[in-house]
Length: 302
Length: 302
Image 1 (cartoon, rainbow over the protein chains, first blue to last red):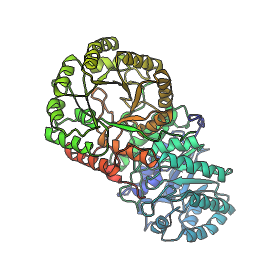
Image 2 (image 1 turned 135 degrees about the horizontal axis):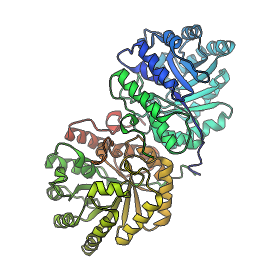
Image 3 (image 1 turned 45 degrees about the vertical axis):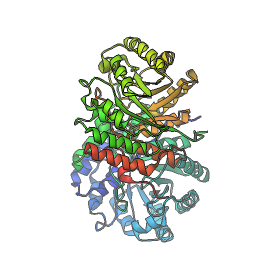
Image 4 (image 1 turned 90 degrees about the horizontal axis):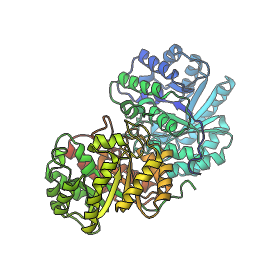
């Protein structure tokens, strides 16, 4: 049945990291903390708060340790951080994280543009990080940017994405998020790729991470849900994009995703009014209108 | 099967009417003609060009007859006009139309706000117009705004929409378009309503008309497609909204809808590059950025 859907999904809020790393002007640390604390209050159970990338590359997140130290961390909510390399990993451990996210692109060209390494080199570099993370008892999440295509290479074959994901599982990833970094995914492709991944990796938590570059973000999320995916990355207000992808619009907006799911009777655990308020707060903090629609449209009349 | 979809769909371009009627500043007649002529060149087979509403209510479209006279009308493309009442119908006939679109809202409150009549009064008023249209050999299309909900009444029961549609068929409508005027539809609802409508009206062409007010436009279009709908209204650039619905974003953007369908392997007959060019032309004409995404993102690399 087309609408025989999971009853419950988990939303992974990535705005404080994926969104704010793309803001031209640096957001003051106390504003980041205010936004993350507000997000923690919505019912979200997983928030990616920052990245331990070198401040030379992403000065916007140079306050990673400070943010992590200052935010409220209510019990049960997972706070994860992005970790690009060994040094970043060590800084993350020092800051007291419980979950790290590592990443390798599905497209060679995108991986090269992003971290100046081949996919094989990235995987090699991950090995000691994942070993150390396991030794520290940290949860490992992996993300795979350009899983659906890349503006340099075009479509990425599903087999390559599946093989890369299997390799990440071998290295210790407990959850893998597949990103449509440049907004090339279409619903049929999303459905088919996730069916294939779910069959290949039945014991790994799989997540969908869509961008709304071509307006298909929510349609792709629907198709992934129909395929059986129940973990979705999104960004409050629809902040974000890709620094190496000119013209890329933001991530799927958390409040728009929550609205669609809740209206369909799929529970997200997130309070819709509160997350819409967070989107307005995010607009306030970055000082411009964000792409998410709910901040203007408001919650539907019941 | 979830993605056992129709192979081919028809796009009904409504931008020149539904879009331009909502523009604050009046667009010069020759610009309208230029846009419609460009749209005629994309492969679109149905274009709603204007409305014969009283110029006092919608001064933006007071040049309806002039536009209709001046546009190129390549063989095979259907040019329709909106007709709100008997006077409008007579003006439309005089201007030489081949298809008219009449409308009755599914929500009493919206119908009252829109035309200051009850639904029953609107249906009564349609009777002589439809009779005369049939006598003139014109095709009758009907649209049903607020089929999925209304900002005053909330959700509209599916049974009421189905009953209203049946009444419109009795009066002579050959095609009926169901509008999500205020962007309240969700994919599950869209799927279920269209399954019900397709079962109740097997001999009538049914169309889906979504707005992107809450970002769900393309997701709803996907669900309608999965339900078996193969006619979709959309507006170039995502122009439009609803004059009686503050904050309503535009219609689903034609170029975004065409992109999603074509990328899924569902043929629209519309040249994607040409319709993206039309969206840029529309932005030029209205003098602002429109909500459609493809004008900025560009066509996906193959």
